[in-house]
Image (cartoon, rainbow, N blue to C red; front, side, top):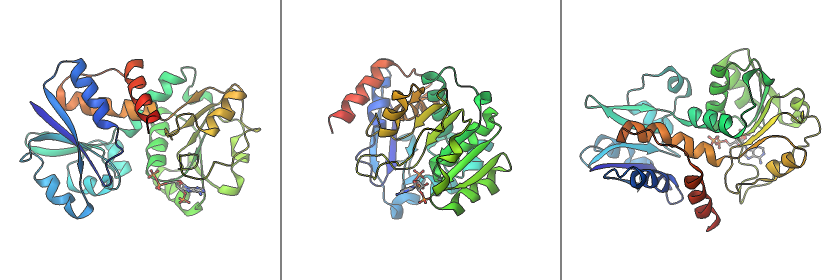
Length: 276
Ligand code: ATR
């Protein structure tokens, strides 16, 4: 019986247990996936005793992703470039970590907007936090030629330019409508539009109608940005699929079966979100 957990602080709202326990049941695997509230003070001790507590690995969420990156072995260059880990597992008795946010972002984009290509045009990313970092690294690896990062705090966007090089440009927040021209994909990685946060104030007139509009916010599922994009016929992608797809590699690593992100799984999480 394999046990896995998700650690974070707070952790109450994590949907990861619903996702993984759905797959465990579907594949008739004896295992469990639990929520563990771990404070920043407790983190090192918790990680060091993961196996003693009976876990074969864990997922990591806010605010621990960077600290865990420092504490485990990271082999893949993608995760190294992010400096943040969301999936932890044992290999030859040693704790390893990887970041599956980028894979989740890309699989969701490809499945919900199948006509999108790296060659569709520049990408405009709103926001410059941890999520933006994963998105930028992924789109660059996928071959997007130009990435425009527009952020309220310009210095944070400039930090990403320094990290990722001259295919990336930093744009001031008050110029956000101008950087939509010729775009192949627009991604909102800010918290704007989330339940309880201010709305995202962004006019879409300059955005081509073929551009994919991707909001990584999933509460609410249909953000105001996505609603407005839909009315002008842009392909749209919501953030729930990213959450579902980022869970796939971890499950495969821990339990030895590569699960599928099905409509049934999506409906299960949508129901849970709507019950809030
Ligand atoms: P994460 O790591 O999950 O991406 P984060 O680092 O807190 O989260 O980033 C949140 C993003 O939302 C940031 O880009 C933030 O802009 P700043 O870098 O200027 O803080 C953006 N954001 C949050 N509130 C905002 C607001 N009221 N207006 C514009 N951008 C906002």
